[in-house]
Length: 74
Image (tube, rainbow, N blue to C red; front, side):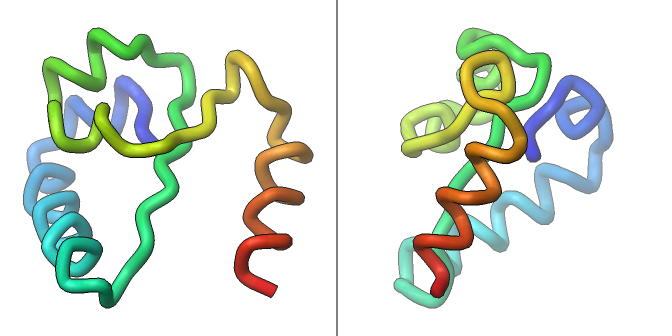
């Protein structure tokens, strides 16, 4: 989940770099969930992450998001 708290923590950049590397190599799929954050804030933090297909808790409920994820992984 990408939030203002996620962006504030320094170790998240390291974690995100690893996730993006795995996604590029096809080992992992990224489905970012934005929570209480704007697109501009995500772009400022990580332009490559802002370019990914994402869900936003301002638009979708947690139930809708979790249902979509369940359908994708089952």
